[in-house]
Each structure stands twice: as C-alpha cells, then as structure tokens.
Image (cartoon, rainbow, N blue to C red; front, side, top):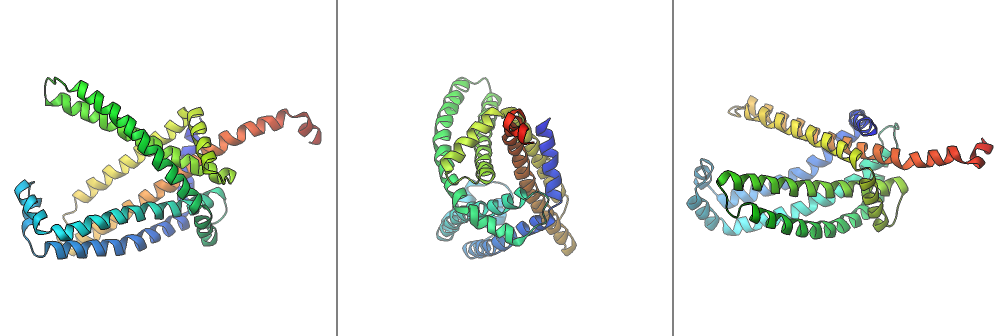
Length: 306
C-alpha cells in the first residue's frame, strides 16, 4: 500500500537528515530562548515575591486566583499581549522554515546544504504566507459553520441529560470532531504547500484547489498517513510526560536530566515534522506522477521515439 510505503519512507528520510534536524533545533532554541527570558522577567516582576502562586498551585482556589489577577493586572496584561505577539511570530517562523524543509526534502538523496535550506526559506515564504492567509479565511468560515452545528448537536444531546456523564460524553464527542476538522484543515494546508513546491506554482488559489482535489481523490491514503503520524506523536508525548513525571527535579542532577528529556522531546517533535512533510511529499509525488507515467507508456509517439 502506497500510504504505508510513504509513511515508512518519511520516517527513514527524517532520520537520515541530521543536518536538517539540528538546524531546525538550533533555530528553535535561538527563537525560544529570548522569548522565554522576556516572559520569565515579566512574570517575576508581576508576581514579585507573592506566595499566592504557591497557594494557587496547591489546588485551584478561585479567590486566590482573583486576588492574583488583581495584584498583577498590569503585568499580566503585558504578558498576554506578548503571548499574542509570540504566537504570531511562531506561525511566521514556522511558515518561513517550511520552505527550507520542503526544499531539502524535494532534493531527495542530496546532502543537506545550508544554502539550499535558507534559499528555500526565502523562495517559498511569500507563497506560503499567502496560503496561510487563504486557509485562515477558510478555517474561520469552516469552524463557524462546524461550531454552530456542533453547538446545536450538543444542546440537543444534553437538553435533558440523565447524568453528568452524558454531558461529558457529548463534550468529548464535540471536542474530537472539532479537533478532527482542525487537523483536516492543517493537512489541506500542508498539501497546498506540497503542490506549490511540486509544481513550482505561483498562484496560491490554484495550489489550494490542487490540495483539495488531491486530498479528496486520495482520501483513504491521506487518512492512513495522518492517523499513523498522530498515533506516533501521541505515543511520544505520553512517553515524555510519563518520563518527566518520574523525575523529582529536587537536585542539580535531576534538573539536568529533566532538561535533557525536554530537549529529546523537542528533537522528536522536529523529527516528526520532517517525517510528516516527507510522507506528504512521497504521497503527492506518487499519485501526481503515476498518471503521467501511464500516459507516457500508452503514447504511440513516445513509444516510437523509444
């Protein structure tokens, strides 16, 4: 099955490109470190030496939480503004890096090159940014419609609940459906990027149409790849939290060990991103090139030239 072959090849190609993996890791650290320092400084200035944080962490106390917000209102306002700016920056940085990742993966077996990577970042950034804006509009419209439908279904399902379990069950179902829709939109955006790189497209509306067409024509294969990647991510995340929870962080050695585990998890997520992009490229390449190969084999003119 092509989906399984694409998945296996993506995992393999993610491992054989350590240059790409550690370049992305270095960029991640370079971007995250100053943001973390700024956030830490603001929180430290805002909370000062208040014991409210410790009391709040011992168990959720709304009164303590309200007092904490009142005491740190100005600093927390700045903090949440910076969070918004950081989220926008995160999206822009990832959009920039995606061009470099796809440029390296598109070259197949060639060695990692900084020039190719950063050249790809610049080459595809504006195209991927336009794609991002297109899909932002699509996401807003889609989630508004889906949200209204899910809210109606939730109201009907919990209108006369037998117990709290019914409401919780409906909440889980609604949440899973909403998450599935969001993941689907992310996958469609990814395949629009793949179509852009594969065909060197300049029209992002055309790339968007190509993405929708490809995903719906090969929905089964796409679903297999996405499910496998999601399961791998979920398994790695569970293993990380189980591992980090066993570390007491009460002395220097445990702090170093916790830091090491966190860095391994970051590398795992970066690797998974590379592998997922490569899976998508492999899948798109197979189905896009297969019709051309069939047409070429059936063409009398091409056969005569051969």
